[in-house]
Length: 156
Image 1: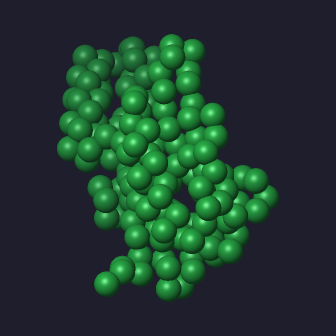
Image 2: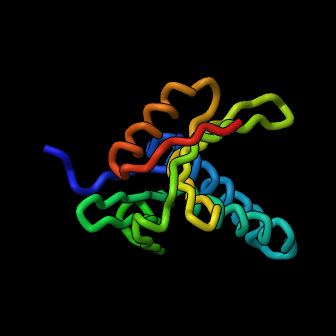
């Protein structure tokens, strides 16, 4: 029996790892606020407020849903995995292919992106894989191709 909705999480870090990082950032932020509690050092407070926003970003999970029965793709941002911050939906016929893209940065670090390519050429990122995870990225692209019925295009 095939499920009509398939869920793909964008982030490569586990939920526990992201929550630990966010907790560490928030502890650092609270420490900065505690140091400056008598006032006067506003740049440090502004700096810590920016890092608090980054911590909230670490707690937000970007998820792509492929609904085979309805022939649509949805992208959601979920705070703590449950509270919807945003959602976008597109019909499946708005996409022409799946891209498995290899990117090498200036430090020779390799990242693989699994993306849906729209008819206009724009891309919707579905998953990312770091390091030598080509087989995992290829498996994810094949799975997405099986669910959507689109062809895979390897790039890079």
